[in-house]
Image 1: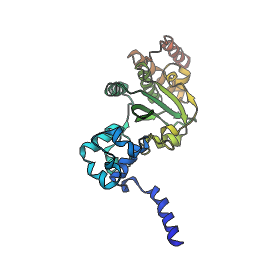
Image 2: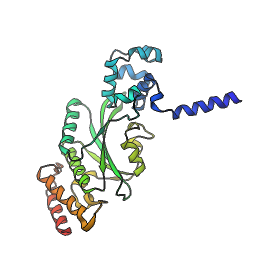
Image 3: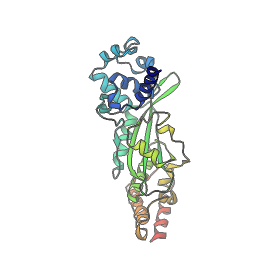
Image 4: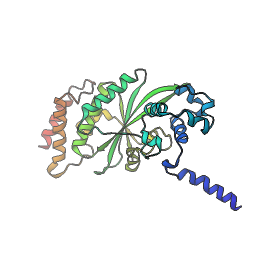
Length: 283
């Protein structure tokens, strides 16, 4: 009975082990399976000279995991090599476009050029409750292939957005507008602060159905409206003293619009007029 209890205890403790304690082969297989590619489907999906015999056991697999293969799989799923090596628990790299929306344009342009057959879109996860310390996370996802009829996605984590801060809100709105103009359709979804924080750290697989991006099932909203409608743009923005945050946010929206960064491509010609009227209202 004692031996049985010890086995049960070790079984459950195996799920609590830090990532760094997992072997390279375990992480390699896990990377595919969490994205929807079964171990036996790796040769067909990944290529690189893999055969079914190569993935049947760890001893056969480890021989195949040279530098070329390790770099290729990290690029395929956009994960950090440090995680795959077991040196760090952060799986996904952080992409921060605060104050640099033109850099966001570069990354979506490159993604589309490098994956012309893949569909690229995204989800903006915003706090479901007013909280001036909560952040938002933008997750881009692209189809990188199929297993049968099932699409396989690669994810990109764009974090660092303090959602209530007027300056962050304006630059985030610009990124959403840029995406829509270039046919990268961003949807909005409200989620708990706790759930967003977990995604933002990059230590959870965004592809994980139980804990990743797709597990957040909050209220949907139209993310493009953050660049089109003053009431959506200002929702839950910290007004600060004498409405400084509100006025500054609207002014920055207008400045970015002058630079062509608030054009969603949706032919909303009255958006600028609405923001001018909103600023006039608060000044």
